[in-house]
Length: 298
Image 1 (tube, rainbow, N blue to C red):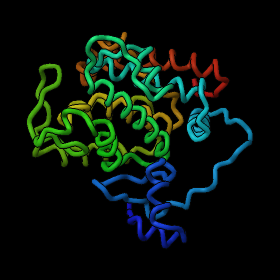
Image 2 (image 1 turned 90 degrees about the vertical axis):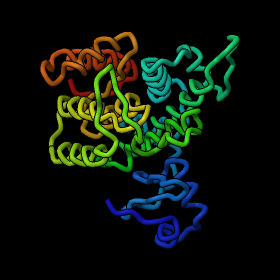
Image 3 (image 1 turned 180 degrees about the horizontal axis):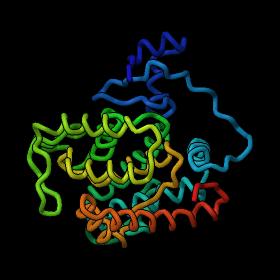
């Protein structure tokens, strides 16, 4: 994808550069990504239209999420996904915040935690994960790209204690070797090449299935491109790709993490473990959709 800068977009849309930056910061320009302090805007991006104040309520998942997000609707599907996906994905990675605490942070934008000690990173990454979900909704219809994957990591890890370590590459690939589940992962020098190959293979598939998305996730986690945050970035990508390919999305729930981990470990030899876990997660998500009257493919 080709990108232009803020100045070029301002001239193209006949608005100020400040307005362009505001549109980007508020997620109003699909496909826009931040490279350090500069915004990169898809060359074919259109000037954001004025928000509609009223209209027919959409019944497909992505349109409903976009509508509820832009309108700031509480208690809907968007609200539920923000809380449930953030809680479960962070909890899988060791966050000690409860579901109620996660809900309180999302609903009030305050902490309100009475325990004697709380890990600040748990709070920062919770708020950041909310922003990641907004990002994937805004960019759901765009082809999966390296820039988008790095942007997710940048948003997730900005402001954490990791981001203050000079060897930790926030928004970029790892510098030091790491392991996952006691298994070696791709060496830092080979990560960029393997990610490019993975994206090329995946994006060459015209009609993607759930198995294609799961396989991408397995290969992504095996590469483990970032120093930390790989699991959460990977699960966000799966949700986005389900939205893009009209596949019922899902949240990987914390109480299924042992089955999820086993499935990842065995995917190359036995695909049934991870597939069945994901199908269970999908079935749970369909309960949400049924409640909100949203259509999905069986």
